[in-house]
Image (cartoon, rainbow, N blue to C red; front, side, top):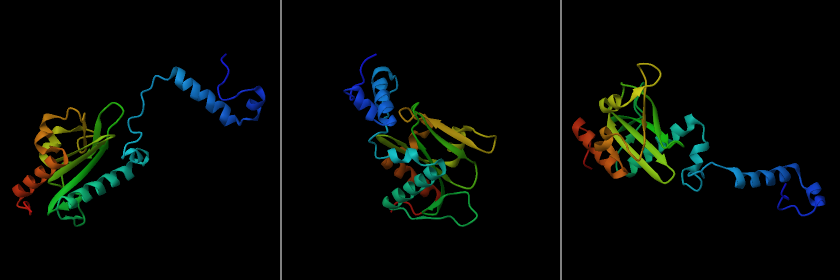
Length: 193
């Protein structure tokens, strides 16, 4: 076997902690035998989100959408109880679905229902890119697939090739804002501010 680099004599190996010894062995094996690709999230502004529990990720995604909509000039308020929407955006009931890109290159937006909102905001983050679609409920429902039975659906997309049905409703923040303004206009909301 090769001598372990970082440990000169046997006496220094004896003085090393168990963690140091196996840590150095693991580092050497990683360099020699690893077939895994580097994690694209390392160094990303969104890396921290990957370590949050799923319900917390969803809550953070909703808050991120809310702050973006306010920054874009929309009035965002909580819906009256009971409601299945997450926000009223200039009076339009909106649900927010949040997804991070998985290792296989896809994003998944889960727990989509067909009631209680006029538009669904799909906010997706990649290590080096963001996506936002603001989609009418009927389009979102048709584009999604059954998840846990007929009442809930999910939408799995590859952000590099989103489904054509989503094209009119965003991808970039500017395009998503335009989609939201058009949906508000169609609904008689306060669009065009």
